[in-house]
Amino acid sequence: MPLITRIPLSLLCLILGMVSLTAQSASDAPVSELQRKFLQMEQRALELSQRLSEMSGTEPIQLIERNESLEPIELETDAQQSYDELPGPTVDPLPLPEEDPEPEMPTVYQSEVSHVAPTTQQRKGDYYLMPLVGFAVATSTNFSQDNLDDDLDGEWGNSIGLSAAKRWDNWMAYVRVAYQFLENQNLNFKNDLNKEYRVFGTEESFSLSLGGGYTISLSQKLSTYGGLGAGFAWRKNYVDVQVKSRGEWGNDSTQSGADSSIVFTYDFSIGLEYLFTQNYSARLGYRLLGLTSNESFDGSFQHLIELGVGANF
Image 1 (cartoon, rainbow, N blue to C red):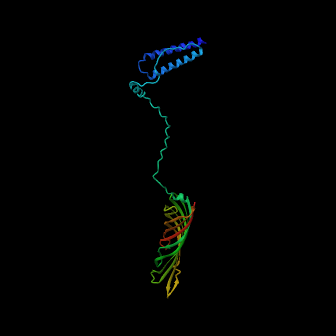
Image 2: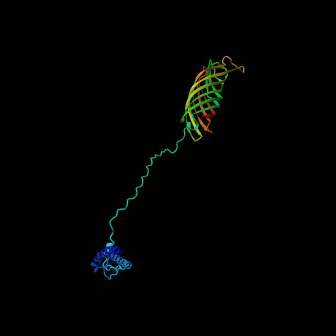
């Protein structure tokens, strides 16, 4: 046991001897922080040797004798302090973690059109079917037969019809069938016999026409329209010719009668239409209807004021 203990102690003493020689070689210089650390290690080694000698019953090893204090001393100069305050080597900062780039958002182009009004086809549907009723006023038409030649002035009449149409956006194409009836007269009809004549007449026509038009929206429900059409009609004119003889009026059967024929028609229409439900609308319009001549009667114009309620689908 003493042999095993002495072998490490000899090695430890050798190391401490070298440290002691180093410390003694600089005993004349002030004790620096590093020297103080070495002296503390030497002191701990001596204390350990003392404890081991007590346990083994041998004499402790004394390497050195010194009276230095292990307390740190003030440096005679501030050179060491200035050195200690020098900045250390430049250390590059750690790189920041790379963030994933934000995904590129698709480019969105904003239209300058803030509001697009729906077309008539979108609001009302592709088709419409509308019955029409109204009243008619005729302009004058000339009646010429034998010795009679003068104008008949139009009176009030009525009309009834049915219109169906196909829409494309705001455009439309329509077909119209209608019946018109009105009266006309002349209470002082001119003649070559120097007699007093008066003529009462009626005019009726059954017409079929095709046409097209355009609709302009004024609001969500109210719109205006215009159209042009052409077709054919069966026109019938009847006259009751009366002559005054001996102060009394009597019928002239030789002049009275009726003429009828197929004539060409054309019309222009304009008006307002109101959509009071999604599938039903009402219309108030004006139509100028023209008819070509019929035998003894020249061409005539009729002014029609029409009112209709129809279905959109």
